[in-house]
Amino acid sequence: MTHDPSPPAPSPWRRRLPILAIALIAVVGAVWFRDYLSFETLRENREALLAFRDSRYLATALLFMAAYAGIVAFSLPGATVATLTGGFLFGTFPGVVFNVLGATVGAILIFLAARLGAGERLARRMDASDGLVRRIKQGIDDNLWPMLFLIRLVPAVPFFVANLVPALVGVPLLPFAVTTFLGIIPGALVFTSVGAGLGAVFAAGETPDLGLVFEPRILLPLLGLCALAALPILLKAVRGRKGL
Image (cartoon, rainbow, N blue to C red; front, side, top):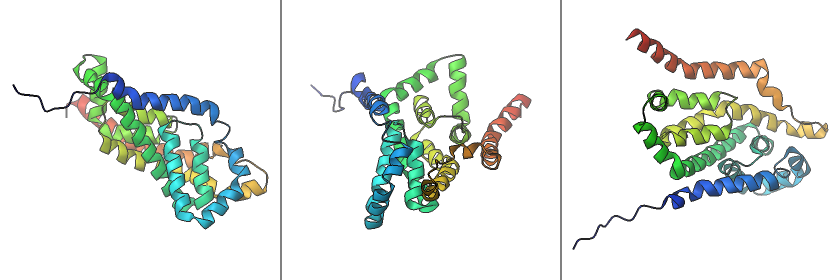
C-alpha cells in the first residue's frame, strides 16, 4: 500500500487567517491608534524623536521602516503622518528612501495575505468565468505593468485599494513589488519634502499644508505620469480596433 507523500492542503480558514488578522487589527487600530498616529503626537514628541535619532541613527531608521511597514500592512491610520515623520527625521534624502522601502514592504505583506486568503481562488474563478468578469481579468493580464503603475500614480486611488485589488485578480508578486516601489516614489517625494520642513512649521506653531499635492506644479506632473502609464493601454486598444 502506497502513501501519498504530499502534505494535505490547508483548510480555507487557515488560508484566510492572515487576512482576517489584518482586518481585525485594522479595525482595532482605527479605534485605538487614531489619536496616537497623528500630527499632534509628532509635534509633542519631536524633541525625543530627534534625540533618539541622533544617538542611534541606524536603529531609528530600521525601527521607522518597520513601523511604517506595519502601518501599511495592517491598514492603520497615519500613513501620511508616517511619511512626514520620515522627512522630519531623515530629511528629503534619505527620508524618501526609508519611506518608500517601508511602504513597499508593508504593501507586499498585505498583498501576500490577501492572495493567500482569497486571491488565488478568486483569480482562478475569474479565469474560468465567462462574459464581463473574464474580459476584465483578461484586460488586466494584457496590460499588467501599465495598469499597476497607473493605480499607483493616480492620486484618487487609496493605497490599501492598490494593495488589495492586484492580489484579488491574481497579479504575480514581482510586478506588484516593482510597480509599487517605483510608482509610489513621486508622491512619497512630495510628502517627504514637506516633512523635511516640519521644523520651521513647528517653530511657527502651524500645521503642514497637505493640500500641496493638488497644486498645479505638483498635480500636473503627477497627471503627466498617469497619462504616460496609460499610453500603452490606449495604444493597444486603438491597434486592436484597427485590427493591427
